Amino acid sequence: CNNGEMVHLTCPPRSAASRPQFSFNLIGDSCSASECGSTHLAGLLYGYRTDGSDPAGYVCDDDFTLNDAVVACKSVYLANTLAGGTSVLDESRVSFGTGYNQFNPAYTGISSGRFVASDVGCAGSEATLNACSFTTPVSNCNNGEMVRLSCPPSPSPSSSSSSSSSSSKKSTSSSSSSSTPAPTASAAASEGAALGLIVGISVGLGVLFLVCVPVGLFLALQRCKSTKVIYPDPTPGPPATPGPTATPSGPTPTITIYATPGPPAT
Image (cartoon, rainbow, N blue to C red; front, side, top):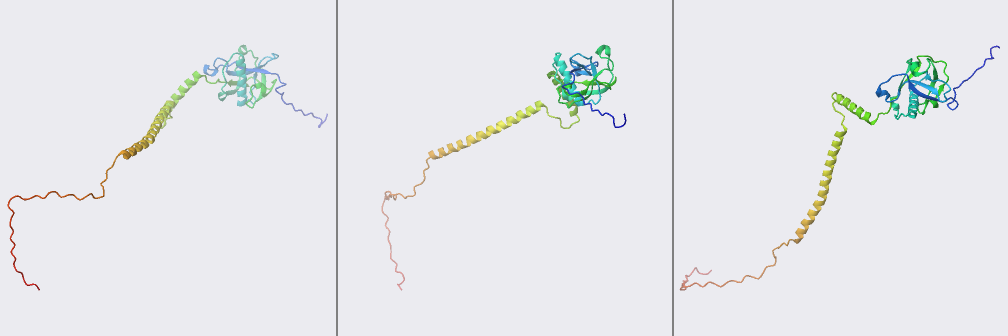
């Protein structure tokens, strides 16, 4: 053979339809009760074929991203739901770490350095890792390339109330440094009630004014109509008849008039 007689191959990964189906879960790690809850919700990600043809193995951290972690947590919750779990995944708080080498074959039952999936590629919207692309079997991963997931559940009503109380404590402590504290729900309700009372009183007074003023004017007009006003008659009446003349009693006085000649007429 000479140059020019080489063979070039393209080897795409298997499609999800033709690839073996796996069940994924978390194991071989410890986490706090608030993080894990009643089931394994944090630990090393591993999987096994659902047909039982191959033993379980870990998922390699090559090209592992947050989208892959979210979908992996969905697979973990699916496995725990089938096992009786009732928690709901809080996708906003999913986290992951790579480069882990924390395993105990006596506890996990997984052989040292055994991996079942690598080069996981998820968009984040898939329901399980089986809908994502990944390479299996794995030949290029070793101990120290395991993925650790933290898949916290959505807060329950009791934990929501405790978290709200803790957040209120934080807001109380931060209010000392803030000039204007954030109004609480009760304060907002009180302000709303006071505003509603003021609006109600204003509306009541307005209605009372609109009703009473026209009624008062109407009654005043009726009273004016019923009142009789007497005006003086401009036409003069008959002349008054003089009374009897008083007659003086006693002797009548005698008045004597003497004529004095005056100057001659001109």
